[in-house]
Image (cartoon, rainbow, N blue to C red; front, side):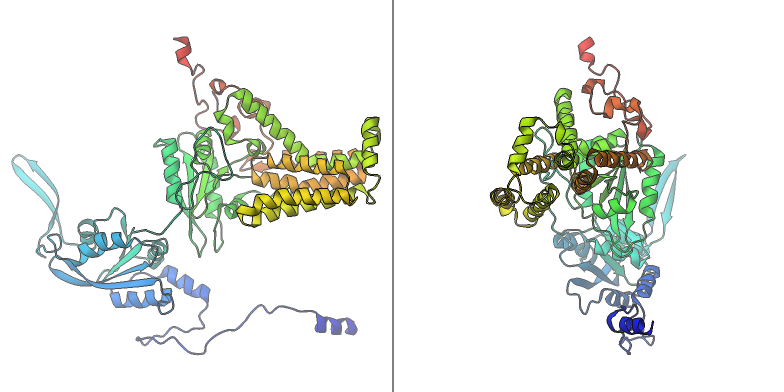
Length: 570
């Protein structure tokens, strides 16, 4: 034991958990109470959250300069000026971030009306404001209100459409960090959050990953307000509810929970809202992170939320009774709940006639089977079940493999891993040469491997068909799942042939049947035959889709009348 302890003490490294980094001085301050530097970051953040705005402008400025480190940060600007109101002058200051505000809006609609002399800020200080006037029996009754500086600034002096008062530094800083400016006035224990956003952002463009031939060519962008406006424009109804939530103690990322008030099930909306509100994390930067945080865990890694960059697709699911979640900074929307068939459905399906949509859907299901099982079936047939092959085909396979010195499992793993490397490389290099790397790499490596006798030609065909099948899957996450579990079925086929693949499929399907997405069975609609009418493999014509999916329990079950094309019967 002593020798073991001696070796562990020499070679084992135990990372130190607590590091005492501090400057044994205090921050210089004009006031007598100086804040120790040893105060932890968590304590500072908590104190900032609980801080209320002071009535003294100088105290507020000291706190702002300390919180934003204005001696270091070059983009944090504080504009101090004199505010005119009712013949009196007050010291005031504006806090904003350079590059995130519109300077023209700031000058014309904030600074100019507050600083310049005009008829709005030169009234007599004793004049009261009439808030209502009524005439009864030739007697005029007037209600007046005494002068209130904060209300006067908000309602009379600042001609800006979005302005609100707050007495908390946390709320004011949150607005400033998102592109607003904050107005502080001496003698007022509140501040004004004024919307003057003007940072650069990407304009609405075509979808890049969900391309359709017949359909809208607009996609979500990174700005959450632009995305909500797209939903409003496509839905064109007052029943669309968009609730704002904040996630992350540091980033305070804005999220929007969207649903149709007259259609969506209230329990589903409450469950989505509950999961988002109960996330105790520091930061949230994308919808992909939120999907992992609010989705039920599963051993297969199957996606539980459908991601879309198309507003028309999101609105279509809203009208079905689902919930759509938007994350500020992410051009993708999350559709909840999502079941397995949703990941095999393309937005193109609803724009085509049912006969064409059904054909494409069957093609995708066949592609799913090929992408998951084809390499494993090839390994099991060539290793255990050669007797099921026609004699001519068997001779061709044996002749092609005659010069290959490696077992079939080695061949197929080498080619599958090589293809995954080519796919990943084509995604990471610049787009101008990405397609070239994919095509040239596959051709050169495949031809060279066959010529060198490392793999057989028929294996190249199997790998190519499998790769093309995975590209036919509309959803990237679901396609990634099939690519990963393809290797598991290859190993099962090599170990036990059809018995191994059959056992693996039994376990695989059993797990899928046991999975749920926000309380909805993941295997629907196949586990309940009554749902097959509108959401199964075979879709009826659009004029026969009268009912919404019953597994969503919507408030309105019917979405159109039994006879929707009334022109045909009048």
